[in-house]
Image (cartoon, rainbow, N blue to C red; front, top):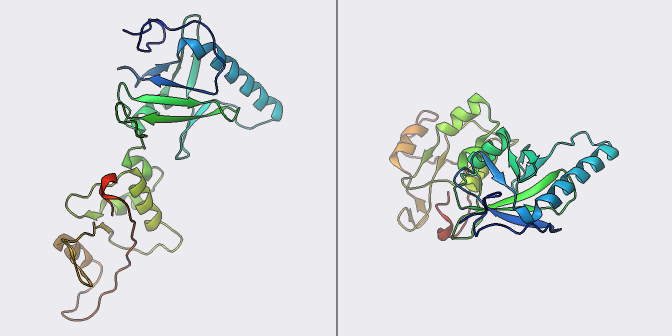
Length: 239
């Protein structure tokens, strides 16, 4: 059973307005279009947003539009509608936010009213598990040029390696830093099965791709530039 106005589970909400510095919302099956604000905080939230906008205008801020700010630094200029019975966040940027983070129904969204500004901090959490959601790996590649995307697309991965957002962003920073060198990138997971003493076994498909860039001697030394990232196995495949 859910509240008929804000769709929060548990039946009708309290109509008593509360002054809070943050609140949580359980997202419903139509979360990709909008998210309703709980009845108990919606009047306070509308007043908070109005006061923050007025303050930004008095200060002469260039940007007075409302936006959600995620921990990764991304901003989403969402729309806020405050009606007689319900209030909601919506708009194209809200839909893009939900898509970028792979949000699903019954995931939890927390909203932080802590900085008294038009940028409102938010977090998403997995339903049941409680761990925070990160953007999808593809979001880490936003803003790259066609040639840069082509290079990322040519990257080879050891069988079974799948990068999460943080790892994909790390790879992007390593590929396109101030000392960028044309290369054929590949991501390899180092474990006891492919490291023997001082030797690392490189997949054959990587060796074949490297031949497009360099000539392999029958004997000799080939120098590779290696960037290592460490992490716990429980956190997923690490490059």
